[in-house]
Length: 371
Image 1 (cartoon, rainbow, N blue to C red):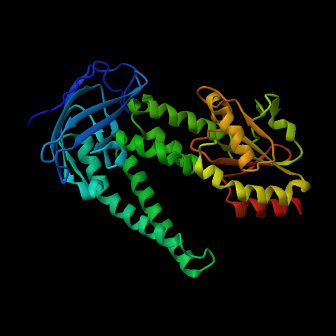
Image 2: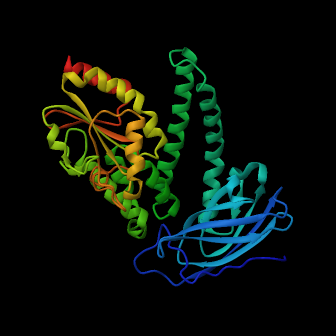
Image 3: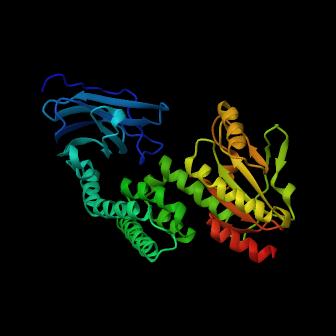
């Protein structure tokens, strides 16, 4: 092959399963054959957490064939782009020591065959089961978007979508139980733990191998589980002091005696801002009956102006708070929030009554409490 770009990284890539005592860098080779790719660029994007930067391996394919080489200190879940990166024609696989073979078709990148190393072969097997379910679920979601929410067909499709989601989650949970030392299990739990019963998440986490627990994702999961215990329904909501839009201090305890919806958002979060019309309707309905909203933004200092502009543009007339930090948002971290939007309904005595309530469930709970 001609014009092969071979990049050897001195600082290499930290793995999701990497531990404090990092092993010596080991070589990997990626050999690809993608039908329909022609003579286009191939790029593998790796988030180098050691150097806090993104490393990119690039090669020019010839007739759909390409070769990439490098070194790694563990196993890392990465993106591979085919052609122009802006086109988002991409897939995923695991960088790890050894010879990795990638084959498939540009028309079906979700069905690539990745072999040669243990993690990739197991990942290909899991995708063979999951991707068809993802495709069927996506088709149902497209159908339900144009239906009346009150129709029988909407309800039926909603049940089908939920059944497929449950099937995917059950498969991943069983995989974690059967493969406690696999980086795939760590990735699955990283995503799932926030939407499963706390005791199940703890059981799955405790079953993981020591190396996975010491990895960056493993430590993140441990921190999230600890925070979720603190803010479990029935517990007292942790008090905090932040700053409002003028820089004045604002505390959760300032609103003691009211029902408070503590909601986490950011100006750039599309799903967060899509909820604002519903939140405004709920606020207007109950604001004179002992209810308020306190929003906490995870926006950073450089986006202070955009945060304040979003508040005005969306017509948010309730208290706002943010620490506008350059890194972590401390209140979001305290409440185990990630991803956003996230919310907690807090009683007048500070007890947490609910988390991530739907608009309907929130109104029903407030109706019962305030009327």
